[in-house]
Amino acid sequence: MELRHLRYFVMVAQERHFTRAAARLNMQQPPLSQQIRALEDELGFELFKRHPKGVDLTAGGQVFLQEAQDILTRVKEGALKASRAASGIEGQLCVGFTSSAAAHPLIPRIIRAYRERFAGVAVSLKEGSAQQLTDATIEGSVDVGILRAPVSRHQSIEFHRLLNEEMLLTLPVGHGLLAGHAAGDEAPVISLPDLAGEQFILVRRPGAPGMYANLIKACQNAGFNPKIAFEVERMLTNVSLVAAGAGISIVPASMKDVHKESVVYCRIGNAKPRLHAPITLVCRSFNQLPPLQNFIDLSRELSGRKITLR
Image (tube, rainbow, N blue to C red; front, side):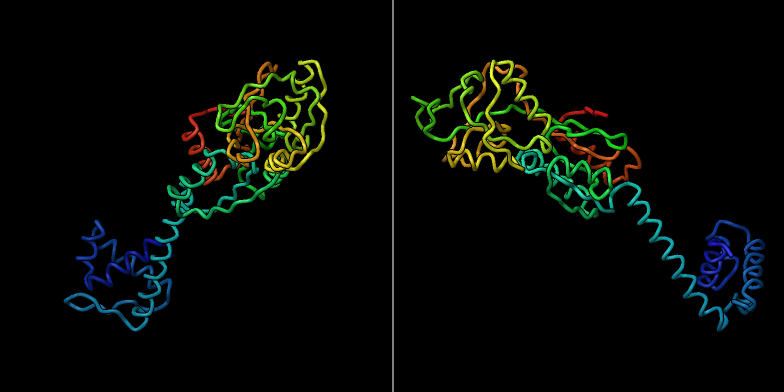
């Protein structure tokens, strides 16, 4: 029994006439009659009682009509759902993010735009460190991670660079390097060598190895090894500790409104290499389901970047 047999049967049942049903099906009447006979032979009972004016459903035909219509409806609905899933209009997507990446206005913009454009996709969110999100992506518990710099490489993942932003020096209000700087004034540019005697508060190397390593290298090129007072899990904690007077830190420019009543954000001069904070997507490089591919495409569209890093 094939779906076409069910369609033929339903059409004849609706028209109560083979010739009219054949016309609607765009076929000749004899082949249609043969197909219905074959279906009745397979079922083992008559579906129609023939008479000069057409046909009537038998008791078995009446019951089979409801079942056939239900089957055809389910097939149609299933095909529609499958089509929507194949195009990424429906499905599920787990998005991971680091707190510092989420602080950039691009990230909530991407997630909001994705929810609006693909409302049929159930989006779940998960916070973690860059290493945690990378591991979760490799394992498959996270579909895409939004982080700063790649922390590790693996053959099963790829990275998409969305943007680079400037890193800013974060000093507590009243710090000596801010002498003569009044509240509301444009923050001064602080030369990196002037930080040689300061206590740094940094995200732990496993959480942000790229930015951590770049800062250490820039300090060494400026003639000193930075003194690390604290290593924390997240950049938001950096700023809180700076506000408490526990040291200084360097954070992405998008965080410049955090604790702005207690800290001052300054540009950094004479840093080699220049200190930048990227925003990067990490995802598996194989079997990318349509909801994930749509998220990547939308992120690239809104960021204006097309860079993929293996």
